[in-house]
Length: 316
Figure 1 (cartoon, rainbow, N blue to C red):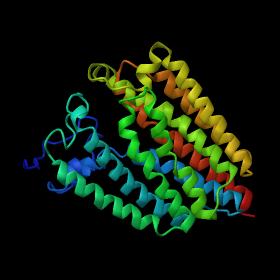
Figure 2 (cartoon, rainbow, N blue to C red):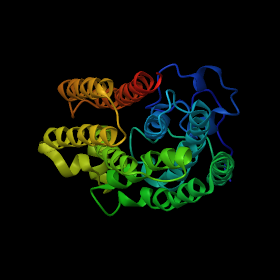
Figure 3 (cartoon, rainbow, N blue to C red):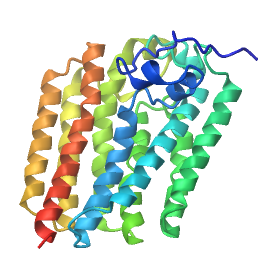
Figure 4 (tube, one colour):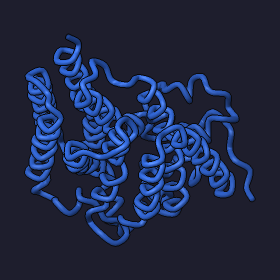
């Protein structure tokens, strides 16, 4: 077993510049924090936001002026733990592929910062933290949360057999649209199911943008993605995905009884999507990464609209 490299030179290629892990974390912890993607927080945001949308919209539907902030805090902790566990699992499965791709060969396992055995132990630890958070919810939510593990387990293998692995990622990353509603109400509602479908379409959009970074390497090593599938028609597909996401979110809100503020939020998010697609250059890896990361703001616009609409309609 090789000894992990705990030196300061282990920065991952697509990490946020001057991120807190590289700047402030103790050297011994850095490889593990990188493995959990804490130096690249955008994935945690994208996993968390559908959860927060759902909690806020369920509260709106229930007539509450404000969302359940304690429940939101639990989901924040759960998203950190489970995104980290999922990324660790993904890196264990993909370690041979990652070593052949320019953007990913600097990740902790292929670069030798962490051994596979250490990564497995760290994955179990993060999963147990996630389980501890899940057990704070009602039993219906516990069962629903455990059911998502099957999707997480198969995701890393999908890029080997289909050009649509982003669909499976969408199933996993938007499970919180169902779980958040269930955690607040103890049941599921049509609004949550429509939000789930909308979120999957959103994921197809942003993760296709992300996949453009690796097109050449993916062709060489035989990995598939929607970025390769769509080719010259990519912009049309991305436009369609964002339209479906926005229309779906609008319908989800209508089913939960939202008011006009939410409609303004959808319009603002649509403007953000147009801005993304206008600036995007699929052959510019840096621009693809920046555009992908900007989807955090798209999601925050939707969240702010739900919260503001709920407060205006229910505070009286």
